[in-house]
Length: 387
Image (cartoon, rainbow, N blue to C red):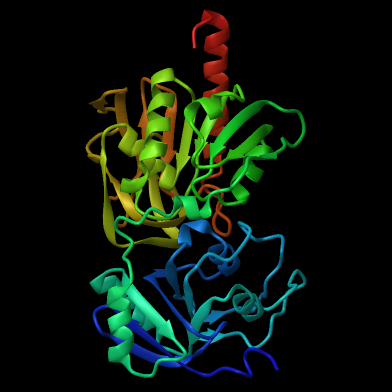
């Protein structure tokens, strides 16, 4: 019997008491997490396997999900990370030449509890107005009040330290494609598989290392640069990664961070972080590069942001312990900081996903910018003999 044929009633309850009744989608049972919505019309497999979604219940705003099935090639990590999944209408068939399994088969195999046949538009509007909040999905509980009690007893995302759950247990290497140009030590805070692959395409040999790695561990590779990956949880808990970043800044080691890595760099520079009302998630977020004036359509997944002054433009940077810093990118929807650039040390970061898996490819140039930064520092070191 297929999972769809065995679908049973399911209940979703938000922490403010609003509830939705539907039918099971995926595994049966009960799950809790932070309810967030993703605006992508495609790329559901990449969303599900993105470690940044660990302990989050994802609501898909696109009404029809699952039509292209699932395959091994597009997985962004070793497993599905979402705590729960909410869709309006699951596809009855998977029809794509690359499809190997159905979406529901993978959800069942991963034990991910989901719900379907609810008004996801109404749920999304509620989260947009009220903010991301805790949620429970159950196929065993029929009483909303009883499920609400368990929702209120579940942990929130603020203060959540989740990096250790998602990082690689041991170092692995993604070899350069073609002639090797650089070696990069990547601190795995929840890295997506496409990121080292795109660096490899530029001649970078990427050593993906556990989040517990020290600065000395990273430098034992004699890398040309350090990469800070995306990841889940509250950046206020990432004290070890912040320490490593501060050591890299002090040593003038080239550094590039994305998403969670942007927040880590922000903290290392002395800025705070804060939780957004409902975050940025999906593949259609407009961002301006303030160095070029170019507007990029970006893929994003973050519920926290860096509290740096947007008045710190490239022409009027602010002073920090590590020199001048500007807010290099801003979100055009709400002026949230989307990137940082250091003027006096070789470091920069963005809040979004330039690897864009799945999503637009407007921001691939940032990997080229990282290569240019490493090349410039290498040339300067060769000429002066000083790193």
